[in-house]
Length: 256
Ligand code: ZN
Image (cartoon, rainbow, N blue to C red):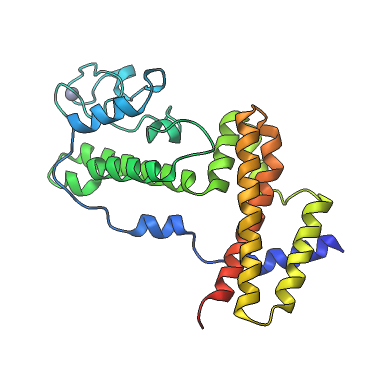
């Protein structure tokens, strides 16, 4: 019985609207002046612990002049050419943030905005084709990193993938395990939603979902901080599920 219920609820939430992250990313980035160059690098160096810095040119040297730039350079210190993205960096490193689940979202936004302002293709309209390409790659990678780290559930799944590389995809695709407490909560919420007759009662259901998400957020944070990423896994699956339900409930609250 629980299984068919889960399927029904899942079908109902699959039509959820686009994530807020996607909307954010469609907003135009201020074109701003030419790349911030030195400023950007000083900020980046202050933001990222030296042990984590591994910027691209270190291994092969600058693609244009061959200089061997210092670590953590987006731009060659010698000829100022934009460098290609360094795929060895994880998203946290790329954005100059500590690798942790509990993330300061304002800081994430600021990092993304700042890097995007400097690396965005709008800045490279008159540059060489190679730099235009690198700028597109850097910019796309930044958006990808930002979107992955913005919402707790995708951030948690990404972090899980860093800590347990074999488990990320599985955790992303699996439905939450048949945990009786979780299934009971889903059932209860579904009943309340079915019986809800006013916007106010739907609002109360939405508040319950928010509350549950806050609790999960707390538990996931603790699991990672205590070095138990495996414990975070089922919690993230539940979080993903509550997120979808939350989006669905919010849609019911929108004026028709
Ligand atoms: Zn160079």
